[in-house]
Image (cartoon, rainbow, N blue to C red):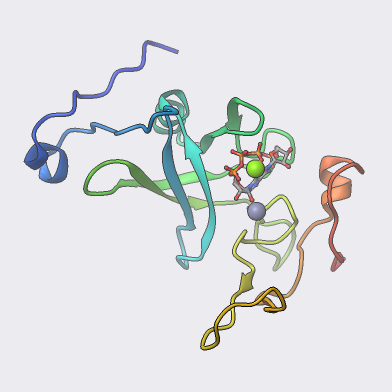
Length: 166
Ligand SMILES: N=c1c2ncn([C@@H]3O[C@H](COP(=O)(O)OP(=O)(O)OP(=O)(O)O)[C@@H](O)[C@H]3O)c2ncn1[C@@H]1O[C@H](COP(=O)(O)O)[C@@H](O)[C@H]1O
Ligand SMILES: [Mg+2]
Ligand SMILES: [Zn+2]
């Protein structure tokens, strides 16, 4: 890949309302990436990108992230085949976060693609009950129909599995 270069961070007005991409990476060289389904807006996952991941995502139109735990570039789907094709890439006002609007290949007839390594379509498959102060006994509610694939089959048997639906 050619050398990565973005526009320099200019004035507040230029960054917030101008036409230049001047991403702001944090002290670890990362920005926040929110990935949503391009068709229905479902929030699929939140991850991080370094300059290389952002540049590769822009250049190839396929989502790349930076894995903090593995300390390396991560092309989503590199192991599972669950790639994310970009439909649109948006940057927020101060350019320290991006939204990826993506399409994922369906896992089967009538089965959408899944973005989460647990097998769920979205990482955000549990909701927190509102209206009472949280306690250690607070119980999360599952808000989808269960995993769409078996992580043990896709990622190998050492990974966490859930109750599969297949
Ligand atoms: N596939 C995923 C994956 N898909 C979605 N996510 C979500 O992406 C976010 C990753 O951000 P984090 O900052 O928590 O984690 P990280 O430390 O940067 O990344 P990991 O090293 O944990 O992968 C979390 O919210 C995850 O739930 C995934 N996080 C990790 N993986 C791992 O990535 C590897 C390759 O998987 P594929 O990309 O599907 O081939 C496998 O080992 C997977 O277990
Ligand atoms: Mg992690
Ligand atoms: Zn997840």
